[in-house]
Length: 176
Image (cartoon, rainbow, N blue to C red; front, side):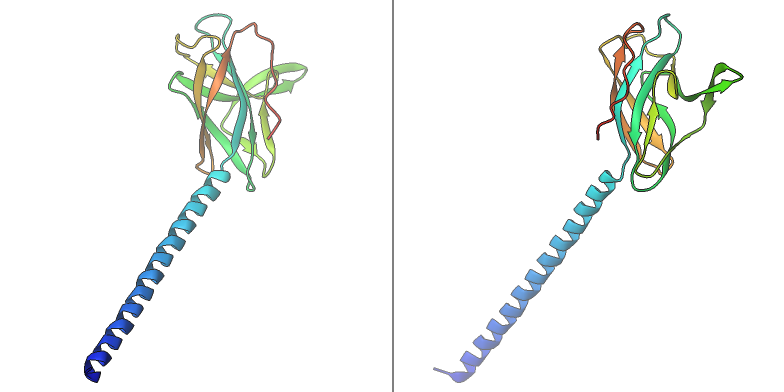
């Protein structure tokens, strides 16, 4: 047996071992990078406000606006609801109710604060959505897609349950 041939073989084995460790280190780096990306995406999803208990009361008279009710649970950071849209409506306004000299008045608002780890409630007799130009195919029992836009840039789309004008008022869901 030629010792110089064995020496070359040992060097090749060392190179192969180093190459295998290099490939292993590369694979681990890719795996760690993918894990970081996935956990970052999961964290971003968790940081979106939660919109729940969404319902729309249809107008008693065709052509009049509908009203929308819901609850938003905020994230760890304060935010603001700045708009709501739907492909089934011409426009949607955020409205507050204020008592001026014993008279309740409705007022369009640009935004509503969503407190950090708190809740914002839109309910009958209080803050609510005014939904103008509702598509005639939206009937009681159908779902109406609503997209809620926040100052932070978050957008949350939910399907609101359309209810008849004479349906009993329901409170937005208070569970998490």
